[in-house]
Image 1 (cartoon, rainbow, N blue to C red):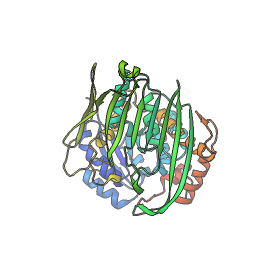
Image 2: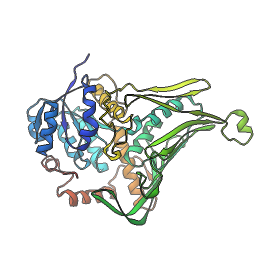
Image 3: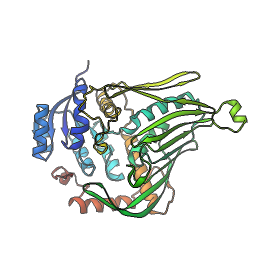
Image 4: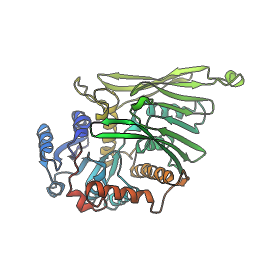
Length: 417
């Protein structure tokens, strides 16, 4: 058995406590937590005491003590870039909570800095590790529904998470993005105690991949507010003689099935005449496998990242409150194990730094396209983009520091409500 990495937890906020902390017991063969670092002294000490490790309010002091060879970076996206570059400069491998960063330029520099210092930098993207994505990819490998050239996704998610999903499903990087947005006024409403709204934005994205493959990704608000369809929305993975379909049954939950057209059906209306339900199994609040029984046999995905179940722990994101999503902890655990095994040179990452950068590039291209009335933006982007400049200006106004200045970032505290 290879040694566990000596790891610092950088960031002691809500996500660390609600999502990551419950997994630490199950990760003891992979990470040995030796420190917690957070400029919020109270929060930092509380978590450090629970873990029986040393607290640090300064990342510089943490690095200077030379007690870690890796870090889990779980803090606001606004400071991902600066902390990542600083850790890379000090040759400390690090896994960053998704999303990657704020701008395309930042993502490129993060990748460059890690490579310059022979450091592993990865993003803990979890959406493509969820059961539907895992089993859908296994089904696609069989070619049972023919060649999949189109995916239509409505009201599940858009943005960095979904960009990553499509990159992993096709195992390709996109070649162009087109985005159209529509904003409408609504009655005033609050999505969270500190988030108030008077309008709603709908986005429709057309993401093209090599070999005439496309994703149509659409959503307004994704939390079921204002009577909209809640997640996981509707997804149709469309092949030449069938589809993998999923639809919302209640907010945060959905059913899925494989719909197949037999030869007889193709000759007589082409309505799917063979339906095969997709089944997800769980034990002790932890997803164990997903499967579908097709004519040629069972197709399944076995979850290898089983965490210890605790009745009082909700393995979910804070935004879902008390709703248990039994796969969520395993998805995060999968990202951590992948990172550790990559550092130990056991595997090549399932989702590497270039995939992460391309998901960020896709997101930035969508913003650029929207600003240009839906103009198609070809990828990769090798020039400065206007949307980056606007985001930089917004971050300066929001945080009062230069978001490209590493020194300012590592000395600054960003509070989250």
